[in-house]
Length: 282
Ligand code: AMP
Image 1 (spheres, rainbow, N blue to C red):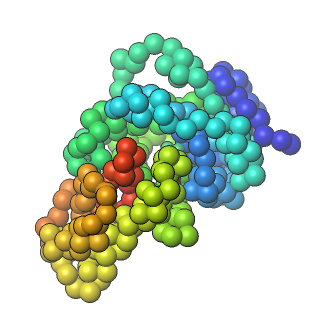
Image 2 (spheres, rainbow, N blue to C red):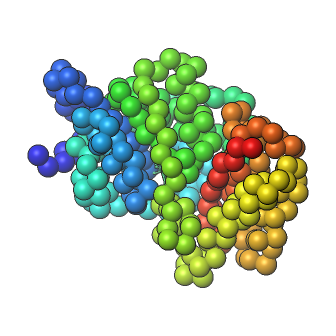
């Protein structure tokens, strides 16, 4: 059967009810569209592990802190549908803003502590928008499993915590970051990069690898390890927003590396903001 597309919550719920009654397990991959091989990996993983896979495509306005970023976000529904289908999805849910937000919300989800550092420090309100829309989507789809990319490590941590703290009956699965041949983490925003910026974008990953190598070679001071990254990026036209080494469990910065950590970076290339991360366990 070819892929089905639903724009309303009511239609999607009716279709999913039938699947559930037939005893099929539902896998869910929430996205903002402009799908690439990273998203495809999430969909393929779900299709392998669940009987039926739903992909949502919704550019969520409440998680953007800059209107122009929201306006410029790529929207490619037609190709998103074909990529979803080839990756094994059965349904694409593509609601309008009005469908998801018939009126401004009074109820929101805040996940504290995990949203004190990294992206949260530079994008006020972002994770409230993410956590709230993900909870809405989980309540709409009610999947057995939902798939998230490790590329957005803070988002993954926030969702895991949300699901644990609020007893949301879903299993969260993490999928490793899919990269271009030159190491650049795949992102919907990469297609906005002009040729020269695209050329230097892999330096983010190289900087992270430099930090990880230093840690593997015995460096255990966070400041010293971070210096390695800054030397990689030194002469490039890249503005680092943050480069942090945080405890993987609570995302709090560490001075000494004696617990599993996340090495995370956010940087601007021209007017495009990219993020990436690696993990390290001593
Ligand atoms: P987005 O459409 O950017 O909101 O991403 C939707 C989902 O795809 C999120 O769970 C992301 O973490 C995941 N994702 C995005 N890029 C990648 C990538 N390069 N590798 C793995 N997962 C990714």
